[in-house]
Length: 274
Ligand SMILES: C[S@@+](CC[C@H](N)C(=O)[O-])C[C@H]1O[C@@H](n2cnc3c(N)ncnc32)[C@H](O)[C@@H]1O
Image 1 (cartoon, rainbow, N blue to C red):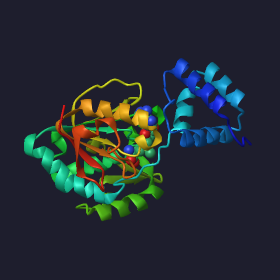
Image 2 (spheres, rainbow, N blue to C red):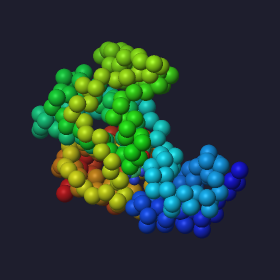
Image 3 (cartoon, rainbow, N blue to C red):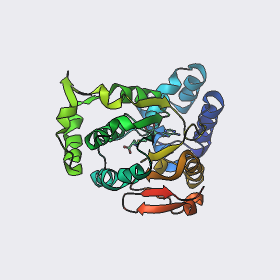
Image 4 (cartoon, rainbow, N blue to C red):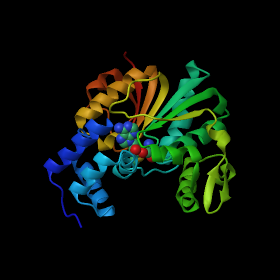
């Protein structure tokens, strides 16, 4: 069992991933990055040297490695009060100016957030007026998102969140049970494009009215948060909204003066300056 990994080894692995595979983890928060790395070594019963060899010699191993390295924990209607604010204040605010609008889910993980948004929009009667891009760096998790199929045991928490969100129906109305899984109605995501995109190295690719990047930047250091927030600022139309996770904040970032706080508890901000 691997007890510890020193900074020099973390650096070697990080540099190898960057040079060979083009992913840049140098500015991820060190403590959680180290914990995840130790977890991989333990899970795979590997030494640091064996991991480096595999990452060097087996090109396909990187996807499996990234899937373990990134934290993919998510829920439907995670933080129900946030989803209520989205439905009751933010989306009506966007609609004042645009009937049709665009949403980006950055770091969408297995898609629970995307399906929650689709259900919210459907219940508002505006699902067809919205174009959505859902991105993540982890291709394995994106496949799960596209499938919209989740273990049925996860549905208890998802249903609880939906009830606290005060949805119009029962969550069960949106999925079928098949072989122990909840398979969501594909029509919900017919206007969603799921794409691989790395927030660290990726280019800006479109303009949006609303960006959700929740519980992703918590794994970045301050310098990377600044860089990524600049990309979000550029990717938003003026008066567009940015929603981040409840434990994250924009207040200390370089770009803070170009946003106003719309809801401090739910971490929703509005771009006011180009
Ligand atoms: C904890 S999940 C958050 C999922 C969802 N947004 C939520 O709040 O429930 C974090 C996600 O960010 C993704 N991620 C981490 N680094 C990323 C990067 N550089 N670019 C894009 N996605 C990234 C991970 O793969 C993971 O799926």
